[in-house]
Image 1 (cartoon, rainbow over the protein chains, first blue to last red):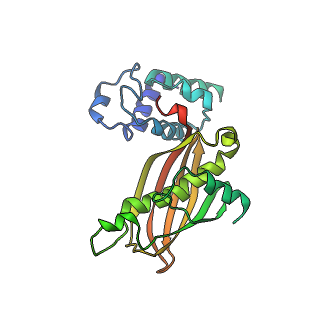
Image 2 (spheres, helix red, strand yellow):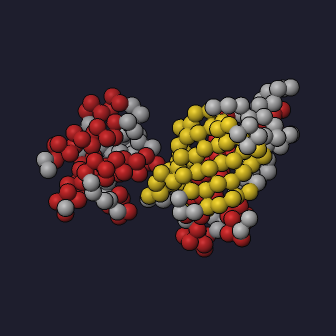
Image 3 (cartoon, rainbow over the protein chains, first blue to last red):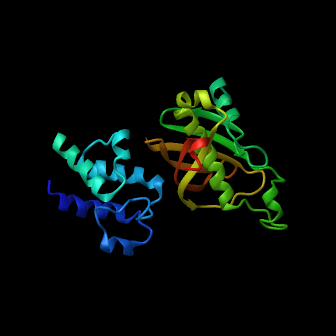
Length: 84
Length: 155
């Protein structure tokens, strides 16, 4: 799947969990979900569950640790989709 | 109450006047059920409200969280907690509830919790609080939290 499409879809998924939506206008691959986007760390689990449902993939405990930034999250999703 | 349920209550870190679990009826992989009866002289009735005691919504949330999230969470993570029973802390991460009716001193509450998910150490449940006296659902909503090692808190 096209990574820019995943980025667009991931942005849609995380929007509800980002307190200040203005940050999303200039979002980059380097943005850290917790430190830059200020997402409550407890909501990372909700994002992972939304991602799993959207792409019909399974993300393990180890993988969630590698999803700190937007770019890393896209990579994990992309890898899982290729495994399918 | 079974020995296991008694053990779970004993593991709760709360104490009076902030322990809101009288008894647990059952806990399974899918949910928990327990009871709390508001005492006539709970400390918060002094101010909420003078001469007109009504149980504060935040206290209902706390009662529901202690039975529906913390007791249930201890059950689900019990094997992992075994060796660190004194050093865990429950962290309340979110609640979205509707309050549907008033709760007065001495009302008896039945709390029922149903698991929505338990992933990556986070537990999310649909929790219902029923007033046994009036047979009315007085509060209902989604609760989330996690149980963590005390040392991790500062990170």
